[in-house]
Amino acid sequence: MWGGRFTVGPAEVMEKINASIDFDKRMAAQDIAGSKAHCAMLVKQGIISPEDGKAILEGLDTILREIQEGRFTFSAALEDIHMNVENRLRELIGDAAGRLHTARSRNDQVATDFKLWVRGAIDELDKQTGLLISALIDQAEKNHDVIMPGYTHLQAAQPVTFGHHMLAYVEMFGRDRSRLIDCRKRLNECPLGAAALAGTSFPIDRHATATALAFDRPTANSLDSVSDRDYALEFMSAGAIMAIHLSRFAEELVIWCSQGFGFVTLSDAFTTGSSIMPQKKNPDAAELIRGKAGRVIGALNTLLVVMKGLPLTYGKDMQEDKEPVFDAADTLILCVTAMTGMVADMKANRDKLHAATADGFLTATDLADWLVRELGLPFRDAHHVTGTIVKKAEDKKCDISELDLAEMQSVEPRITQEIFRFLTVEQSAQSRTSFGGTAPENVKAAAKAARERFIR
Ligand code: ARG
Image (cartoon, rainbow, N blue to C red; front, side):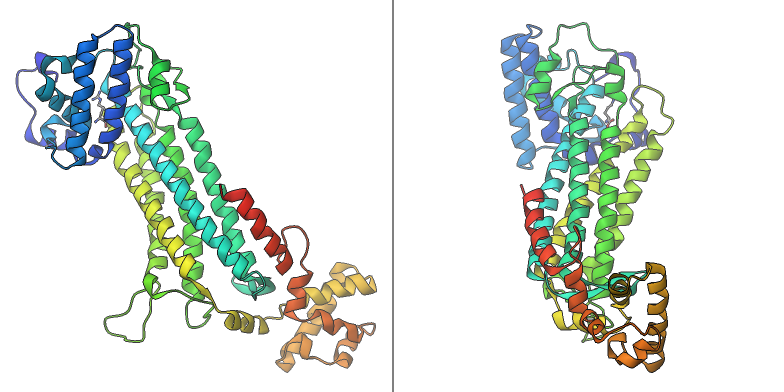
């Protein structure tokens, strides 16, 4: 493609380090779409003839079919997807192929292809995340009144409902989605026509190519157009945050299905057995989702470090952008899909969840709140009184609801029999009716609202 000023070909190892075809062939469809838009525009602007344009467009369609049907031979000597396609075009249609690259460079070409690829990945991940959110809302509705311990420091804290816990993740994945959508908006400007770096002297119509490729507008600065990889970094940043959410949830599932908890049962379809211990049912999918967060975070770091300190405009370093992005996208889509399957099949064990609320004095806050409400104690004093009562129960190895009234009154004489009504975990959860609180009726309404907010 540039033989003119060279006398010898590249060293073997040069070809090896230089070639990106092994991975950038994943952008074949995007490359051909970009070339078709460019070609159509060149014809319309009178820059190439309609005959050449027709031959080019037909040739590109043929190549796309060859690639889709696995009949295309990729060559590392031709370095990347762009040159592989152009070379094949020359084989198919002859010299007219050489006119396609008028007013274009591989620098704006690769930026366009990659943006199109990332945009597609965002759309797919957004769609899959929607399905995960939907599965979580189903679980929330089914279990809106199932009481379980809520934790801080992984210490039992207050009764909450299982449905409420599911909806917490709905909020997180909902924010992840909105970050993706936000990233897509900023990404959606077309670099095609920036050429190598300075723009071109040909009378091209960048608005036309931008529209043809479903971008909102062309990018405004040619230097930035070929240097920018923000969109890839932003996609992976949003992805890394999402991977963390997936990983936290996966960790909870691992804990919840362990023998000590038994809060949920995962289906056989998302667990594996042991080759030596016949009784085992391991939560491998959850563990892998937890582990794969490392890959996504690593991919983001890889590209951040590649881009750091690169002078404008294009540098070949930037060819290192694709593998981390492909891996992050593949990993995220795989993890979200697996999580959706796991959540859809998961069974919440109502009895085990309820039984776990027996330990840990989960209604101590309800006792303190009663002292504030009924006796007018300042909350700090009520906290102290309740602490003393908890200590008594702890010494007797029973729950505070199992103490008798006299024992309570020895700490605070004004406590009445009525207090016992407020010391059940059901009553505790039911009383949390503040906006965003865990009361089963709230959860029911919140699940319905979440469906309206998140399911499009
Ligand atoms: N394979 C290259 C990449 O992925 C395409 C752009 C090459 N541009 C250049 N000036 N060498 O970045």
